[in-house]
Length: 78
Image 1 (cartoon, rainbow, N blue to C red):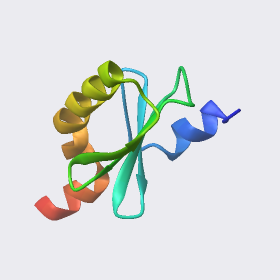
Image 2 (cartoon, rainbow, N blue to C red):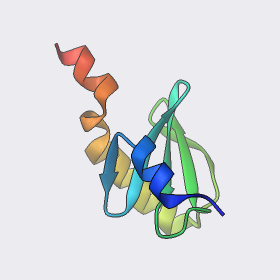
Image 3 (cartoon, rainbow, N blue to C red):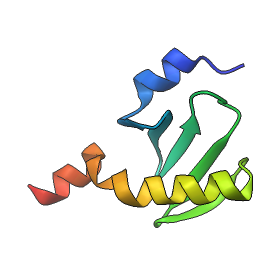
């Protein structure tokens, strides 16, 4: 089982119980209530997921609305 506290500490953003964690060139989003549910985004698209279609749709909307708050994106603005 994954350590939820560790996942939350690694996250740059947490929205509605989903932790946004930078991984390589993309972002992994993990459901902190069900850590086995995760999605990996690369170039603004899900490339791998362990979520069902409805949860993946929800996470895609959360990603598009909140990725701008990731630290990497703030560096581009400055």
